[in-house]
Amino acid sequence: MLTKKELKEYCIDARENYLAHISIDCVVFGFHEGTMKVLVLQMKDEGEWYLPGGFVLKNEPIEMAANRILKERTGLDEIFLQQFHVFGHPDRSKEHFDMYKDMLPEKENWFTNRFLTIGYYALVDFCDVNPAPDQFSTSCAWCDLNNVPPLKLDHTLILKTALDTLRVHLNYQPIGYNLMPGEFTMPELQKLYETILDKKLDRRNFQRRMLGFGILKRSEQLRKGGAHKAPYLYSFDLENYRAALIEGFKGSW
Image (cartoon, rainbow, N blue to C red; front, side, top):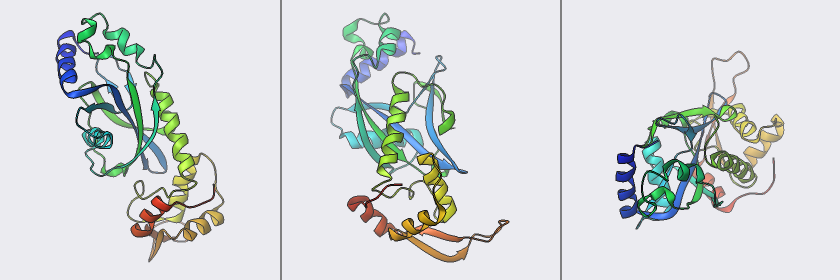
């Protein structure tokens, strides 16, 4: 929670520089050691958890605002971003309104605005991210998708909607380039899909379908060091992958 002085300074800056009534909230997905991860922020003094987010500068395109916000939280440029929903329930910011309403006159208080928030999900390489808190938070950290702490405001709904959207997108777009290392095995890629979908997939059908998309290149090198037969290493064919993002493909998992 901000002090009265911090709130006043922030509200002056916000009114001068940012669009009123519009915010951005981001669901940042990573994949590490066979587990889907989500980036969350812990607020100062409150100890509560939120998704990364922010506001839009007055002369800033929405997509540029989302990229700016995520670069500040992750340190990454050129993040894979997908806008997926607008959240606009009248009471979605009520907790913040109640928290700050008596600290400043209403016309001076940025948090008395009703905010519509634009939801984006991002797919990033877990190992490339350098999580950084914002001015309101003490911690920015990864947590397991299946062990996310209770989120404030409507951020649990935003996270669920992002995951549901990602699962739908798996049916007609390739997913993996932004989440996997440069080289990986077919079982590792299958584990990513199974983790997102929360279900087991048939090994032969998965391999046949992935190879049929034409987005993978097989290396002549094998993954060494395991107890079982060494699997082949694969990488994404970027030209075909990017074409598939635009053109899509049919089917469902």
